[in-house]
Amino acid sequence: MSRFHNRNGTQVPYTAEEEAARDAEEAAWTADAANRAADQEEARKDRALLTQSRMLWVIETLLGELEAIRRGDPPTQRAITLRNRINNL
Image (tube, rainbow, N blue to C red; front, side):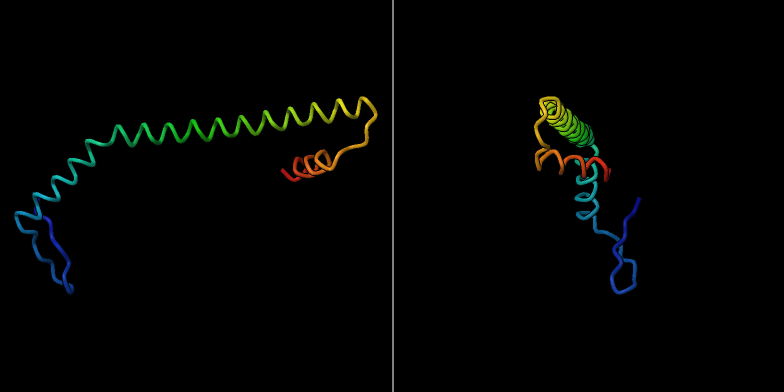
């Protein structure tokens, strides 16, 4: 398949060297597909882990605040802020 440049509105065919260079770029891109897919999966797992960590922090904070309420302590500013953030979800 012949490729073309668009120069000043005119289609100019690639030279043999340009064709070979472009073929090499496309081959490298295709060969790297597995690495890109692995990187995307790793990023997805990182996002999921971050979400789980945040959820765990919220649960631990809520449990601590519930324990403070059980003891009769007044709510902390952190508890008020957390309650407001949860209400705004």
